[in-house]
Amino acid sequence: MKPRIAIPYPHSSPEYSGRALPQYTRAIELGGADAVVIPFGISNGEIAQMAKSCHAILLPGSPADVDPEKYGESLRHPKTAASDPPRDNLDELLLQDAHNMRKPILGICYGVQALNVWRNGTLLQHLETAVKHARRENEPRTTVVEHPAAIEPGSRLAAIVASALGNPAEVISVNSSHHQALAVPGDGLCVVARSPRDGVIEAVEGTAGDHWVLGVQWHPERTAEQDAVSAALFAALAEAARAWQEERGSRSADFENLRR
Image (cartoon, rainbow, N blue to C red; front, side, top):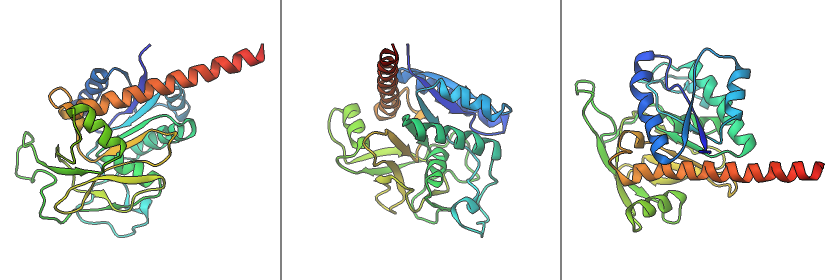
């Protein structure tokens, strides 16, 4: 059985979710797992039951911004977008389940920001930098913004990049579509990639050896069918989910044998 990866609806807007969600589910499937979409409008108990059936979680991007009060900022930047409480609720329940059960976690763009705040980290509400991290308001949606990301040697991310490219790469090119970024990494998270020109955090990963956690600020789901590194990120998540599935299954079998 393929591992099952839980993914919340990206945003309360049906238009945005309808456009963005298929890219994530397709990338999960290409990586070798099944996507389990967690919808809005169901009870917390139903969310918990759906999460229980999954072996990892993926937190996708969103046009919303995390409420600044959640990371201790009472002043709201004029560019900070409205929060999305239904999405927040899904994320928090999925993160709690993944933390309790040590399930693998992949956060993408807004998803890594939500993960960071959930782990008591902080965000930069609006980037003021010479590096272009998002398309301008007057540019069409088809505009692709790219810039380099410097990868920390020896990190889990570096290993994924090396497996995709066939050799270690200290710098890769990433797409970019965000106006906020991580400021202080949350508990148990370390920085593993930065934009080399302005130092903006581009990726973090978990420091606990028994818990696979990775978050990237870019959007690999958009290029999973063309880019080796993007595809490798989803394959790595699927492999981590499969390993969790197998280990949890063997533990359950051992427990059942002890009861007999």
